[in-house]
Length: 367
Image (tube, rainbow, N blue to C red; front, side, top):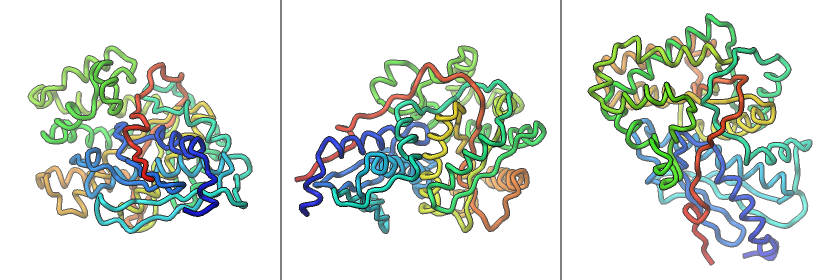
C-alpha cells in the first residue's frame, strides 16, 4: 500500500461508500458488493442479487452497478479526493466489475461545482412512483436534464416525448409488455414474490426490494394485491392489465428513453447506469419526479440476442414488436441500443422511501 493511499482516512472511504450504498437500482435490488483494501475499492456483482429472469446476462445488474459506480465517482469529486477508476474485463462473479483507487495526491477536480450539488442530493433522491400533475416541464429544465445525462461522458443520449398522443402510444406499447410480464409465470413469480415487499415488516427485514407502500395509493395497492395469484392474473381481462401504464404516462410531463450506438452489452448497460445516476440526481435537484420503466430493454435482449430462451414464439414476437414500435416513437434506429425508459413528472415528493442494505452487508474489508 502506497504512502499516498495510506493517507486516505477510513471516514473518507466510508463517505464514498455511503454514496454508493444509496445509488438507485432496478427494483431496489442493490446487486453490488465491495471489497476494500487500503484505499482501493473493488466493486463486484452480487450473484445473490443478479439471478432473475429479467436480468439476462446480468444486463440489469450492470445498469444498477453503473449507478453505484457513478455515485462513488460523484462522491470522490465532491469531496476533493483524487481517484482512478479502472473498468475490468468481467467473465464471472469472481471478477471485479471495476476498481476505484483513492489517493491524497494533488489533482482532485470538481466539474464547475456540479458534482458537489449532485452529492448533496444523494440522500434525498428517490424513485417517485406517484402520478404527476400533468404539467409540462419547461425546455430549460429539460435541457439541464439532458446535460446531466451527457455529463457522465459515456456516450449515452436521451430522447423524450411530451405530446399527449405520443405519451399515450408509448404507454400502450409498454403496457402490453407489462401485461406479458404478469402473464408469464416465472416473471410473475419473481415480481410478486421476490421483488415486492408487501408489508413494512418485510421491507425492514430485507432492506431491499420494492416497498409497496412507496406507491402511496391504497386503491393501486389493493389492485396489485389482487394480482398476487397467477391464476388471478390469467382471469383478468387483457385491457385491464394493460391500462395502468398509459394511465400513469398520461399524468407525466415527458417519457424518456436512454440509448447508445451499437448492440446491447453489459458494458453499454453499465454506461447507461452511470448516466441514469446523474439524471436521477439532477431531477431531484430540480424537483422533478423520476421513475424508471425498465423491463422492455432486458426482455428485448433475451428475445433478440439469446434466442428467446424461456419465451414462447408468440411472446418473443410481442417483445420484438414492442421494441420496434417504441423505436418509432423516439426516432431511434436499429443500429442503436435502447437501454432504459423512464417517466419524468411534476409531482409531490414521496413520503415513503425505499430501504437500503447497510454498509456492513455489502462491504468486506481486507487488511
